[in-house]
Image 1 (cartoon, rainbow, N blue to C red):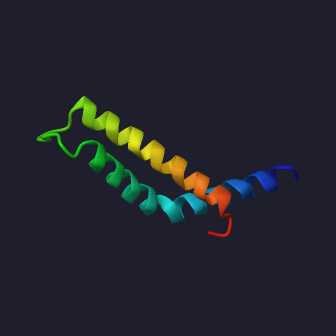
Image 2: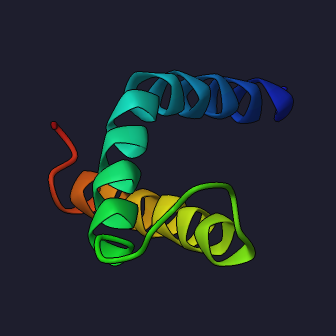
Length: 73
């Protein structure tokens, strides 16, 4: 009986994640574009890949904070 609430919570989290995937992608793209605005980018470099990963992480953190502060959003 204890597994039902956990499963429902996981399903709810999956729905929320799916709902905001495009939001995270757009926010991460904007963040990485600002960070790398003055660099010439001809191919993927370690700096580009690292910046992209950090930008996704930052975008998720921002989204989670917004959802925490405004639960009905």
